[in-house]
Amino acid sequence: MSPLGAFRGIPRNDLGWLNSAGRPDPEAVFHRANLPRVGLDDVATAATGVMCSVAIYLQDGDLISNLTFVSGGTAGASLTNQFAALYNGAGALMAQSADKTSEAWTADTAKTFALATAQRITKSGVYYAALAVAASTVPTLVGSVGAKPFLTGEGNLAQTSGSSLTATAPATIATPAFKRAVPLVIAT
Image (cartoon, rainbow, N blue to C red; front, top):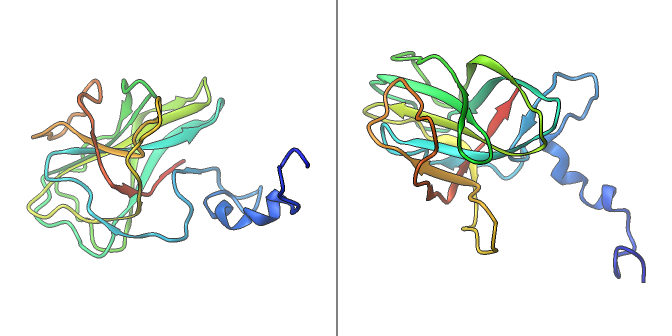
């Protein structure tokens, strides 16, 4: 028996398909993503004015300036407010973007939200990237489906919170509710 139990392969090779979220080229632009780029589909974001936050693992030393979300097959319509925010693992606001108000968000389009203040990560761990959109039609996002946490101490991969949000992110993620749809977020 090896330290890997009965497995006799090379874990790096066997799990390589999962690494599609990472940088294939060390010289490529720095980024962190919460999901691999395979198996993604259209997922519902959240209701208008409701914030959706997704867990993303960030490393000590990372400098996060932007959060990018990718719309799915449904474009936003009659947008009035749209912002992104970064929260620490305890759900406290670290920084948010400016409100993009009525800026169009077409289908199948990446939208980057620049944080008002870039955040240097000082402790590796789970953080939350959040998005809130107020519109007559909230765009769907590219993402996946996640299971509800069932182990003690396990957190949500995606969650919703707040209501009637407009241009300002709440100071904390208060009363988060499990969300099965997990949008892709890319932190740069």
